[in-house]
Image (cartoon, rainbow, N blue to C red):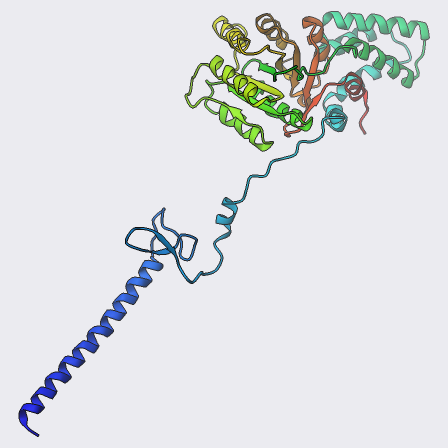
Length: 399
């Protein structure tokens, strides 16, 4: 074979071998880059997991093209994040106090047991009557109601002369119910012709106003009311968020301001305006807690009500009181009533107090009925007040 031909063949063989080697090395490099691209050892926060909706080869214009092959299902946490919010169904309002009666029995049993024990003694002398008065005063019944109740019981015990515990209990029950006055109208003013009923909720710091508004929203939703909430407590950073959370649980929208420290009267006005626009049944306005001895804060509360009234009448002003404060709550109630004309009382934390007599004392001083009582931390532990059920719980004996 000619030497030139041999040389030519050798050169071609070397070139061919080089091309094959280059292709093999390039293939391995491409495979490594593709693997690194699809399964990186570290991932930025905005990287899309491999195979997920949006995990795609990206063309020059940045348009995502779904990968043809999909791996296993995505992690469960991502599925949970995409789950829709489930709206809760509040407990029925009717008979709610009776269902919560066990808590009331437990908290107030000392009050009932003490009175029954004293009144069932073989001989009720002046010392016993003094003890009865002391028990009633410690239960925050108030001085005048206490004297009135003791005088009535004295007369009945003297006339009937009965020492039968069942009869004594019946007498005490009748007199306590009479003191609480079952004839008072305890219904919430949540009906208004041609417009939403407007409810303001007021009170001092720490009594649970925002929580009460949230629970009351559940009461109204359980009564098939269309409700809007107004977060007019603009000074407590978490108040609007807290109220929004309560509302969202039962599908109730909240009107609030994005600006901390915004004018509460403006927020309240906007909430009522939105209620009118949407033809809602009830607009509830949560207000900032304020001490009753701070004149400027009380003046501001009066302003909130006046501004609301430029848009709509205020149908209900509920004063939230902490039952554990006892007689101290009466001075609060008096000042608030003077500023915004309180129409009803919400008594919270009654489950932690043996001072059930505060119901009578508040009503006597203000001439305003207790309309709702709180008996626990649960979302449906706010109940319409019922005089007879309340007294029965006071006097019920536990095992």
